Image (tube, rainbow, N blue to C red; front, side, top):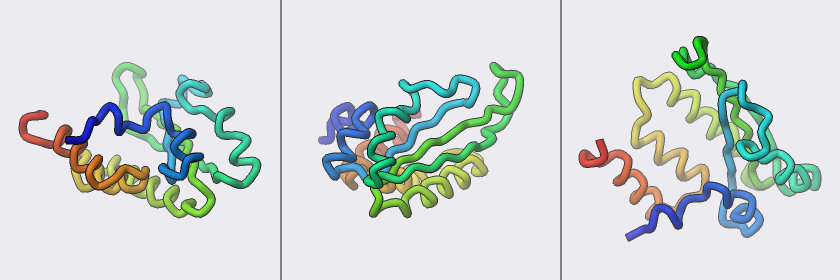
Length: 137
């Protein structure tokens, strides 16, 4: 049995990337709250991008109308990948674009994004069982 809390990469992205156990880190939030170092840790990653160890990209997506904002939510994604795994950035952005146009987020899209982020098959299986099982609804 996978401990989902222990498997989670949140707040450990840089450590896992430097250790070679994570090829891609993705951070995002609505643009009205950015910049915010605790949400998108630009400064923590800056040295590794400038030294060429990592690559960085960003994209902004319209996530649709948000009642709390009274307007469309504009979500900024900032992605960091190890230099040799930079192909994961456009692949992840494509999966997000597809997901935002789909009527709902599917297990298949979750599995693609989990693989791109570097989760193991076992971790992904456990996560998808947790999120998409009939009992999780």
